[in-house]
Length: 224
Length: 55
Image (cartoon, rainbow over all chains, first blue to last red):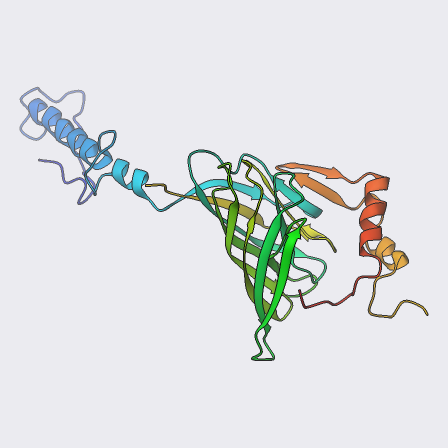
């Protein structure tokens, strides 16, 4: 039989120790031919290095949009979490998500790049679930990015989510679409860090209360 | 004038987060704050609003 892979999985008949080379049910030559066909089908599915075949795994891995760089579990009762080796030359831009944990106080989650405590600029557009009024808040050369996440309330689920552009490159780092929440206030922050340095790590923290549980996941955008 | 009921006092914060219960994390390493670090962390929260839903 020729291989059915990759349309379906093969089910080969194994020979026994007493089968003759010219067995009518498991001819020796057919055994080799079946395995050869199956190996060739596997190679075609995996693809060669730098494969241009869109259906090959090599092509799909090389061209996927997001790659998980790192997952960092958040401990119990911590005021800050520093994630090292998050940024590198492999990716220019990143998506960072924290979820699955809680925080003990109702306050927004903040962000620093490396150990930098200067040059953070941003604008928050936000509103309350109880009002249609749109509000704004600013940070002008602050010591951190504010408003990159937050909880539903004290003791409840928290999160952080934002995109970082070029944190590893020695240029200003842009932050986009930071998902702010503080209780019933929701918003989005855009900004930049006006320090032209390369960073490999970042710190998420709250200045009131503690974080517990969940995980921080760092994804890299394929440079293409 | 005393502190309003809506703001944290040092006594309340110390009861809620006693010395030795607050840590910082770097990757998988969680380190308990020293007493001096913890005291400064408490001080930074004294006078902040207990419920502050705005930015």
